[in-house]
Amino acid sequence: MKVTGYRSLTTGHDWGRLIGDANGVMPEQRTDVHVLILETDSGLEGVGLGAHGDVDRVFGAIEGEDPRAVSALYDRMIDRVFKTGHAGAAFGAIGAIDMALWDLKAKAADEPLWRTLGGRDRFVQGYASGLDIALDDDALVRLYERFAERGFSSAKLKGGRDLEHDLRRLTALRDVLRRNSAQPALMFDANESWNRSQAVRFISALEQVVDLTWVEEPVRRWDAAGLASVRQSIRAGVATGENLTGLEQYRPLLDADAIDIVQVGNVWGITHFLRVAAVAHSRDLPVSPVAYHTNPLAHAAVAVPNHLAFEVQDLSAPIGLDVDQEFQDGGIVLGDEPGLGIRVDEKQINAARAVDPPAATTGPHVRPSRAGLRLVPDSQRDGDRIGAAGERMVHQ
Image (cartoon, rainbow, N blue to C red; front, side, top):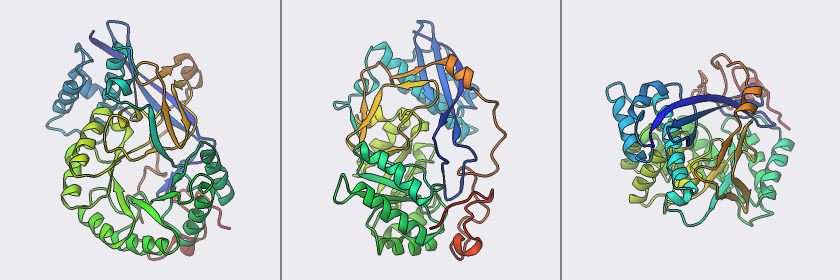
């Protein structure tokens, strides 16, 4: 079996709500989902997800190769961009291809990827995470009630701009989850919006009222000294890693003893996750994947000894993608379809495909000009505005 080509598709996910974080809110309830399909001379096709605009830079490393040699092909792709570097868009393309290669490897063995990777249990412990900063309090409760109905007893709240607002929402979230646990796990995500002093002040105030399991990305992802300083000053654990594009980027954080929960982004692929998990395990640290559509890393999570909990952002799949997994008992139950268990309906995707939007100027993927530079919470400074684009957030 040889890799012969690829197809690139763009579909959408209808969240039924606006999503965002402390850096901004997406302008629409529907967001793009990028799908990569690897073609082979045997007729089998592999599916990978995530933005892959640099695919042509690395595809030559796998073209004509047997996709079952996936670990070696991963290193060939990394080597292909040796001088220019593999971070950013290149790493996204490598991750999407790697995902599709693993999908092909498991399909060739006619078994689900979680079995190919050596998993024993198809259940993946999870936590709810609604990307919820744009929701008013009532909508927040309704969203997490849906997660609670599926057995979730842990959840992560987006915040970091208004202390009183976040405290109110954390206590509401705790009350919802208490139907499943007397002591639900509460996580808080600031998405790199603070400096270290702001982080300690804000988290310390939160911890006077609620017990936080971890605080995610309190400062910039590469700030080993800052993360270590925050970690030493609060009770909650510190989690980070979803935006690190390469195994080597974890080294200074681990050497500085700066993190408690090692995170990995789904979009960076299976091989990257397995390697990060092994490095974290050598330090006796847990690993926790940060979600993406169809939750592909869930197959790898059951195959590592130090998986803690998998972020679940929504209970539905993107348009044109049918995924062999269920959400129950507070996690993901993987199915038996070969590979990642993702079926792609290209006709449905093409029928629903929209014209590519212009590059975003605001939103959760664009860092605000005043991030980390605020003297007072934004609600005191300029009412209930939450971003440069003027998205509104209800304060009650």
